[in-house]
Image 1 (tube, rainbow, N blue to C red):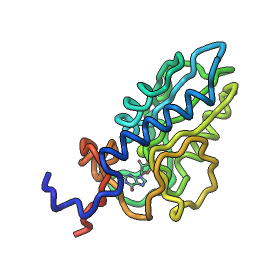
Image 2 (cartoon, rainbow, N blue to C red):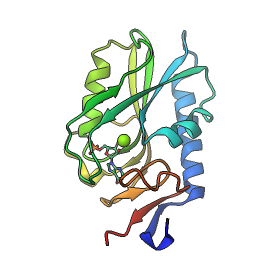
Image 3 (tube, protein in one colour):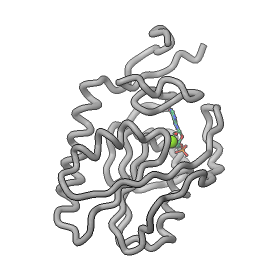
Image 4 (cartoon, protein in one colour):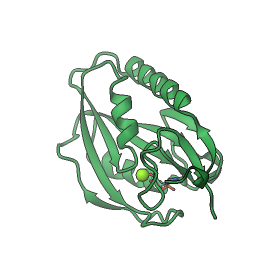
Amino acid sequence: MKDHEITKTLVSEDEVKKTVQRLGAEITTHYGQLDKELIVIGLLRGSFIFMADLVRQIKIPLVVDFLTLSSYGDGTVSTGDVKVVMDLDSSIEDRDVLLVEDIVDTGRTFSKVIRMMGNRNPRSLKICTFLNKPEARVVDIKIDFCGVDIPNEFAVGYGLDYAQRYRNLPYVGVLNPG
Ligand code: IMP
Ligand code: MG
């Protein structure tokens, strides 16, 4: 990976850390005491790094599960055509569920996931995203726990990829389109 491929930093390592701490505190406060553990569901693959950091900042009992969807192929434009590639391991019926995403862009993917998960009758369903691109929104979504708003540019790093690369960058940057 060459550094010159990243033209600017959108979220520095330090800001990543502070954002995750803030979100963990908000989530901890929001849920307080639950009868059963919170189910935290990460959407793979983009959310895996954020998810790993976030759950360590949530100070209540929880279990994790993952959902793999396919939508983008290797392109940079969301088609909104969402398929479940790997489903959850466990039932979410009558449970408190927190969905964790790397980024909400057009909102198409998440709106479908929310509908899909809502049909399984959880007790509650809340949304947490690390990044949000408000200018790109096509489908309206209520985000309960929101990390950082970014401009309408293609972001990579901290789990986000371009053609599966750059996920391991410890910060979020913009890729040089050339
Ligand atoms: P949406 O359906 O347009 O909201 O897109 C959701 C998915 O597209 C995210 O979960 C990401 O995987 C991917 N995505 C959207 N914007 C970006 C970006 O700027 N960089 C990397 N992936 C993105
Ligand atoms: Mg994703």
